[in-house]
Amino acid sequence: MSTTNKWLPQDHVSSSLKKVFIENASRELTPSRQMLYVFHIVEALKYQRRTGWVDRGIEDCESISDHLFRITFMSQFLKTPGLDISKCFSIALAHDVAEAIVGDITPTDTKVDKAEKSYREKATIEYLANLIKPYNEKAALKLQEDWNAYEYQTCIEAKYVKDLDKYELLVQTLEYEKRHPEVDVEEFWGALNLIKTDEVKGWAKELIQEREDHRMSK
Image 1 (cartoon, rainbow, N blue to C red):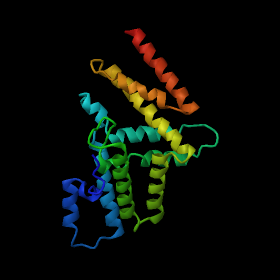
Image 2: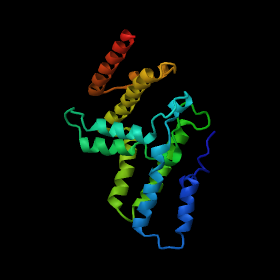
Image 3: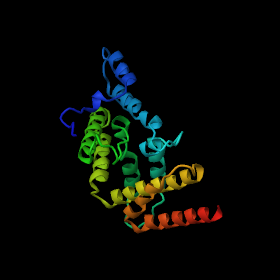
Image 4: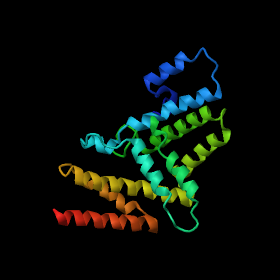
């Protein structure tokens, strides 16, 4: 069921952050103070656990921030000719930032459909960009451009980052298979079929080989 006409990002920041904002309401809201508010907001990425693992009972599973870091780290090693690696890097950083407020909504969430998820994330990016804009308008616009590029797959760099998103999930899946053999994570391997670029397919091929080697060693 869609709640698009009611959902506003500022209503969904943490209660502690709302308190900070209220406490500072009587002070001048300088551009630097607005940036500090943004930095406080994205702190949520550090402790929000990825929903798919939480739903399967994996304790101390990766956070959204963990996932973002490894994708961004991976992006710098892409060597396909014509790729703008700095653009891959910034798109990778931006693509899940909205989850600091929206949360990690998965396809299995029956309350929020794909269109509503996209709406909420776009609204959150616009909200963050408006906070950033008084301090650094260029950076605010870039955040929106990078998020839009990923969401709508408008450039080759976004397509590679999309593949890295799937590949990183697969790497984590194998790591949890080894660490938590009692947990069924088989369905996550379906992401393998969603990888489209040759370079990332090559990385995934090696991952599958490692998985087979691990199974044979048992």
